[in-house]
Image (tube, rainbow, N blue to C red; front, side, top):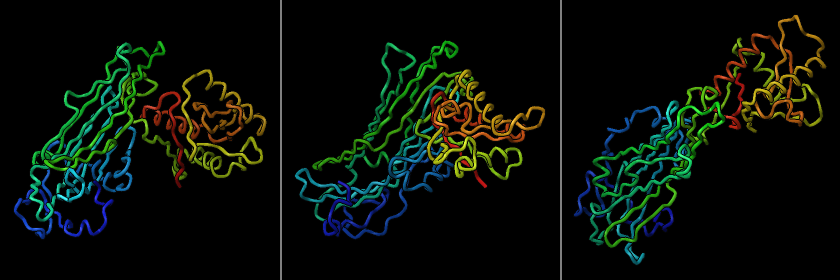
Length: 383
C-alpha cells in the first residue's frame, strides 16, 4: 500500500532507504544512507532530451504524464510503498522506485514505441520481520485496444511480450524494455475517402508481490491514446501516428516582420474583439483557450473566404488594385470560419504578402502535427 496512507508511527522504523545494489538481508534497521541506485541505460540514454524535459515537468509527469508534442510523451511516476503480511496487520518492509514510460509516435509510419522501466530501486525491511527484499517482485502488464478484425486497417497489433513481472534484482540489472504497437494498412486509399483510421488505448497495470505479502496492484499506472492514419498529403507524410491528447499550436510573433500584421489581427480578435469586424456587443473569438478545428473540405473553405471578403468590402469598400488582402480569423480552413453562423470571427485588411505567409505557416503547422479534419489546435501570439 502507498506509504502516504499510513500514520507516521507505522513508518517510524522504515525511513532509511538503501539502494538495491547495497542491500544485504542481514542489515539492521539503521542502514547507511542510500546511494544512487544502479540502472541500465542501454535502451534510453539518461541524458536524452525527452527524459530531461520530462523531469522538468515533474508534476504532470508524475500523474497523467507529460505530452511534449503529438509525437512524444513521458511519465515519471515515483512509488513509495509499504509491504504488509497477508493479514494486512504487520509491516514487512518498504519499497521505493521510479516508473518511467517514454512514448514515441512515428510521423511516416503506423507505429508507436514505448520504452518502460523500473529504476532507482531502494528498499528497507522491517526489523524482526525476517523478510528478504531480494524476493520482492515488480510487474508491469501492458494492454491495448484494437478495432474489429473485419476491418484490417482499424486493427492494432501489440508486441509479443506485453508484460514483465520480475524480481527487483532483474529490474536493477536491466531496467528498460521496449514495446512496439503497429497497425497494418492497405496502401493509399485517401482519394476514396478512406483514411484508415485506427485508435488504441494503451494502458499499463503495476503490481508488487513477495512471499507471504499482501500484493499491491495499481490498475491504471499509465495510459495513452494513440491514432494511426493513412490520410495522404493533407497530413504531410502520407501515413503516421500521433498521441491524440498532445497539444497542437500555431505560434506567431508580433516581432516577426513577415507575419506581424497577421499576428496583430489575431491578437486583437482574441484579446480585444471589440476592435474587430463584424462588430457586436459581447463578441468573443475562439482559438486562444477554446480550440479551433481543422476543416479540409475545399468547398466549405471557399464559402468561408467568400463571406469574409464580402464583410471586408462592406467595411472598407473596394480594395482591389491595392497590395492589401482580406485576412480572416478564425481561418477559412477551420470549422469556426465565418460561415459557421455565430459571427465569432474577424476580418481585416492587411498586407498581402503578410497574409500569404501567415497562411503558409498555418499549413506547415497542420502537416507538422498531422492535423486531420476536425482535429483541435490552438493559436498563440507572442510579443
